[in-house]
Length: 271
Ligand code: DGL
Image (cartoon, rainbow, N blue to C red; front, side, top):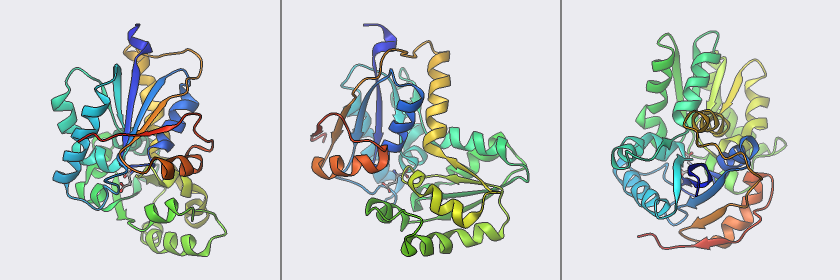
């Protein structure tokens, strides 16, 4: 088997990582993808760094049982809590995340050096975005807001622009960022691309919105090409695994991918 034909292992706390998969398929459709959603332990965003790291190490161990050429941490919360630990334990596998690519993009796009970040409690608490953005642009001021209500609302399908509930929640979370006159806003959670239109309607079109899912896929494509690992073949079906409730995952996949999964989702016990 050619190195480039091997799988890319992608994981998330649950279903949100499918927005990263969608972006990967849009950018590099020829890749063989294995996805694992840790639906038995979702959400990660409300948990401690130690607990998230424990779950993440199990997720990676499972993906590593396949013939993989790279790992994508398709979850901002997992990335900000445990990427260093994963890199330390798997020095021979290229590990890609979502925080670094989105931070680099935001740091370069901003004109007034005022960047907003919205994410889960754990991601904001880790300060991973602040650190990464300042690494690429030391003059940037980063304003962060944890938005714990957004993940459950998105999962309930409450992300349409004419839905007064999500509009009110978005307004409450984003008002402090609007007041700071940010010109760039990072969607630092894999569920948030679905909220793009609601967020844009509130924050206005002068603020550039950066999806960490899209930024991650762009970055992955560039890096795989550099490592000579890019698979430019035909579109592949992918394999999808979850640790609980495969049916729920199958039902909701369409919402996150804009398309239904063309394969069955398998439930596995990885502990
Ligand atoms: N997918 C997670 C992220 O990108 C959010 C969901 C969770 O809290 O587990 O941060």
